[in-house]
Image: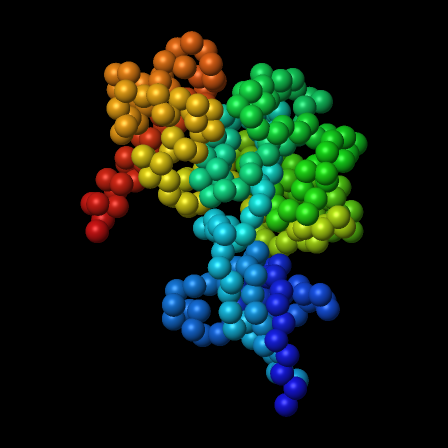
Length: 299
């Protein structure tokens, strides 16, 4: 029998079927039972080895080492996350944005902020928080496609996911990138202040310039534990503006909250970085403490 070994990338996972893109096209595959036994589930973004035999459904036999992984939605090997927020309806939320940034920074995924609907509301104050912290910020007008060239240049050759609150315009952005998709954009729910969850299956789409991009389901709140838990003592490394100060605190185990001789809080008092970013850091520390306590009580 003719058996072929193929290397490719999972672009979509639906009900136990895995769609693997490779140099010759796309295969619909099953996965070996050993993955389930070892509590490993193949997911979109995984680099895999497939065995294809004539007249049989191809089987994924190996999942290559992941450089990163997010739990919800399950995605592997991301280079970049486009964090999409809108200037209005729903209004931008610094805590949600900072939680997402911290998650991606902790996993070595480059966060980029995309602001939609800025034609309806000035969002420069929000944007300046992230520009001053060293992040790329892109203004996007989905109605006329303004900013799409900058988005294309940013994601070219990368494995990218669109992440953001419901109703911010992720699906509209995908429609501009891929007009043939005609993705249902949904409507903002005035009662709930969020959009309908129009994206349910995560799928990577190939970019003409190389790389892939996937839309992801929207949300109304962000729970860090659903995306990946960051221990309290590691949160400081997920805020890049803290980096110049970390070696200058009086105590090596400084958590940068109320400790004496803390260089981070001293820098904050001098206005050297954003108060809202620091406030998000404090809230994430509190959440990390609560989660740790909850896990302890539920052992």
